[in-house]
Length: 136
Image (cartoon, rainbow, N blue to C red; front, side, top):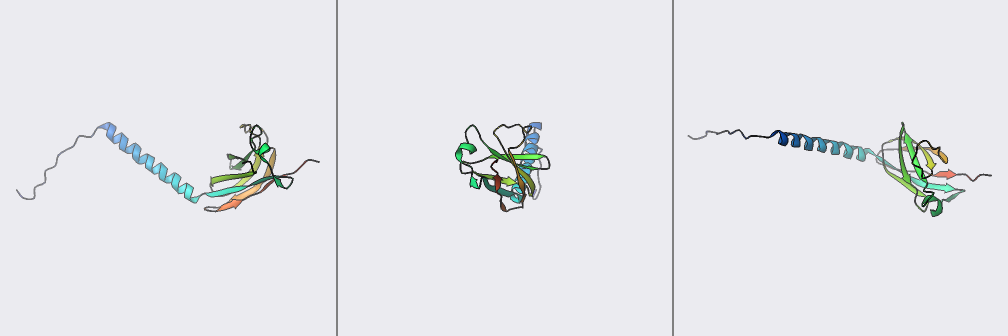
């Protein structure tokens, strides 16, 4: 018999089907995160006090100042480096309110300094300076 196709049913366990569904769902979620990261922008800058970048004594250690970027009720925060610089490497394109906070992770504590708003555009780096004014 030439050209005859024999078909056999291969038993597939429920566990194998669930595993395949979970793998596909994970790949789709990773693809969505990757697409969001490709559309993201970067926000970077320097926190200055009296015109000069804050130094390591204020940026690290027990003070541990942090910059917060808030948009639509969502807040991201990063530590300020010893030279006063900060970088948010991946932010969705939007306008962010910036502020400087102490190391206390609570959102109930008011900022030490509210900075100007920063506009982050897709696939670009926005440089944003925050100046803390000296009292008196």
